[in-house]
Image 1 (spheres, helix red, strand yellow):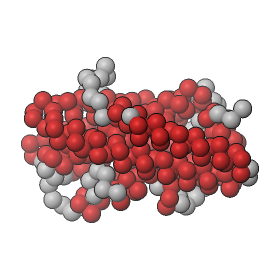
Image 2 (tube, rainbow, N blue to C red; image 1 turned 60 degrees about the vertical axis):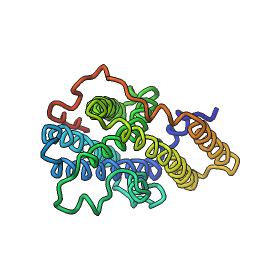
Image 3 (cartoon, rainbow, N blue to C red; image 1 turned 30 degrees about the vertical axis):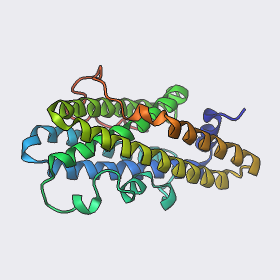
Length: 262
């Protein structure tokens, strides 16, 4: 039976596909770490109290990148080049989602609106990350090879999502509600399209490595297109709602250490 679990089991069992999966994930997490570190350094004076949480967010992302690289090392594998069509984080940036890297490379203070944009972008992408890790946790939380990594990253992504909800609600109460909703909608509609394209590219690369038949590849592609259709028709709305999370001040402390892999 073709399922998300069976597909990932195939990817996990093959060294070449596993190396590509971990390399794509590590690259995206490392980019997220750099972005958050730069944003924390450039926070406007009026929002300096937010800087430690942004720093914690970036430290978590860096930690996730190290975890994926550690999983490779544990298998005796090296990172592999990431095909540009599978680079989710860079494709988001190139499509104008979030704060441009050119902007972040300059030593100029960000504005409050820039912080609202950053948090809105994060609200959308952390929803995706939380859902992806929840799926992996459902099927692989007890896996001897990746279970500890999956549990750690999933916990962190849930914290990141809670932090975005709480901080965006604070900004909404301060009068930024309309800007937040507008930015969330723009980000969500762009993200679902980019996620579709990246998913198709990742599956195409995995299919080549694993020797999938045309029929199997077509079924997987159809599933990706069906998911996009659902999201385009209204599923994207789950990415723009705001509610006070059960986890309050989720990024209020230091980042936890990455688990050790023998």
